[in-house]
Image (cartoon, rainbow, N blue to C red):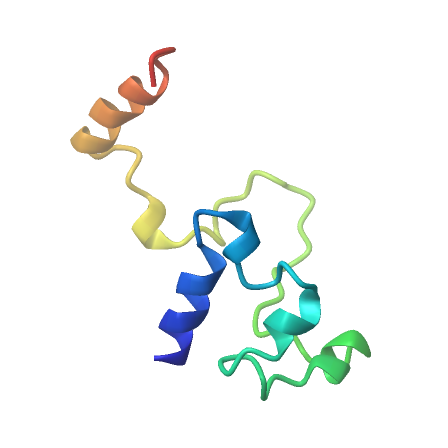
Length: 88
């Protein structure tokens, strides 16, 4: 419930109604994020849940999610072409 409320308030069509229009504390104090350790984040005490390996090859695909490997899918190719049209 709190997560859905947060998302709904963040995507309000009119910017004046969006969560955070009155500053970042408005977002931090939302019920969904209220218990988050903001001070620890600021002090860099929180360890990242994912740290990619440092490689020299910036085009290495080993960290790509398998579900995203749909480039060869026929529907992907069909819709990929339509995304290149100027009318889209």
